[in-house]
Image (cartoon, rainbow, N blue to C red):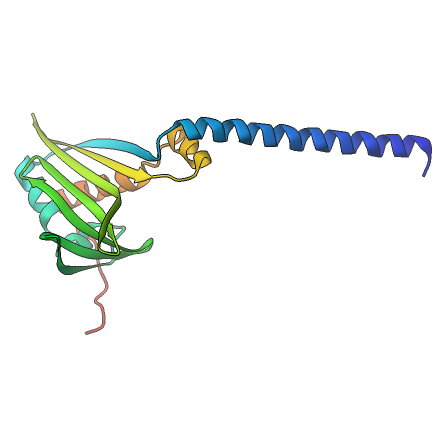
Length: 187
C-alpha cells in the first residue's frame, strides 16, 4: 500500500468517526430534551358527527355491538367488575387489552382506562361529547405513558393520532348506518 492510499484510508476513518460522533451527540441532545418532557404524554383529536349526543352516547356504551363497527376490534368479552366498575377484554390485530369504565357522565363525558393485572394503568381515553348545531362534537383525548426520552420527543413532534382518528371514523360510519361484516366465530 502506498503513501496516498494510506492517507485516503485515514481520511475516510476520520470522516466516519466524525459522523458517528455527531450522531451520538445529536442523540444525546435529543435524549436530554426528552428527559425534560413528562413521562405521561397526551394526544387529542375531534370530529363533528351529525347525530345528537344521546345517540352517540348509546353507541359508545353498547359494548356488545362494538365488534360490529370498530375496525380495530375482533371480539369483546365482558369480565367481572374491577373495583365495582364494568370491565371487558378487547381483542384485535394489535393484541388483547383489558379496559375498565372509570367515569360516565351521560351524555357528555366517558373515561376508559386500561387495566393491567387487575390494577389501573395507562393509556386512558376520555370522550367528551358537546352538542353543536347540526350534531355532536366528539373530542377524544388519550393519556399514555412513554418511558423512552427519545420516544417522548417523537411523540411531541409526531403525535400518534392514527388510532384515535380511526376510532372516530369508525364511529361516524356506524352512526351513518354502515356496518362492518364480521365472520362468525366457532360455535
